[in-house]
Length: 70
Image 1 (cartoon, rainbow, N blue to C red):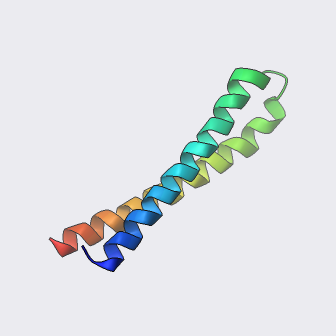
Image 2 (cartoon, rainbow, N blue to C red):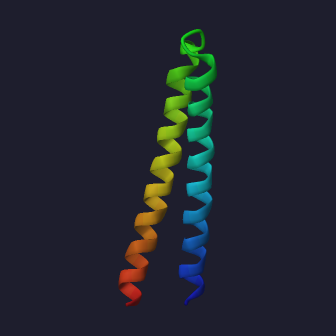
């Protein structure tokens, strides 16, 4: 496996972990602080969306690189 693919795989793992962490923040808000904490909802949701989008972009790069290497 090339160094480029390894780097992309690490990036996918990192962004997936960050997305999961943000999802847990949203989960905690839903489970523990709503409805009183509704004011936090949009900010947290935007952070979750951005983290998931970053993972998707990294994953798409990895998939493209894997296809090109095959």
